Length: 128
Image (tube, rainbow, N blue to C red; front, side, top):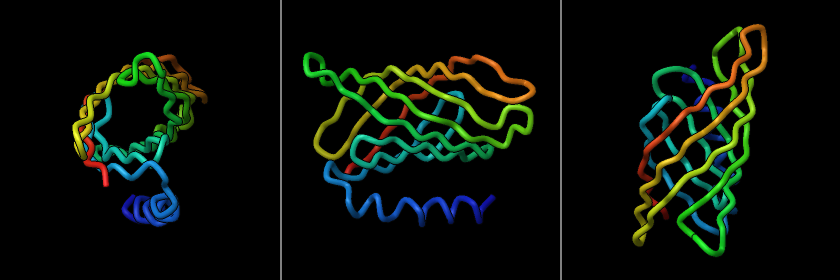
């Protein structure tokens, strides 16, 4: 698993160099504890307790900039339902370099034990 995480980190490196909206690195607690990485308007979560990777595209509203929505995908070590589609709704508060966020994430997993779940996360990112 360490090799996979190292490989993913190296693959994400070009994205961080080209990010026009900055790069945020932090941690999130909730259904899955994960390293939370933000690159521009993309969110990446890499699980720390079990192998799970989430990638979401974040959309903000102009009327309520703290409110966001997202669409994305999930890959996990669950052999019966390894792949899923996600959507999310969240709130974020950012002061200078620090962002505090909370989100609710309905997701559908596919496979033998496919399921519909509602996950959640509360986290913090430092933006560079």
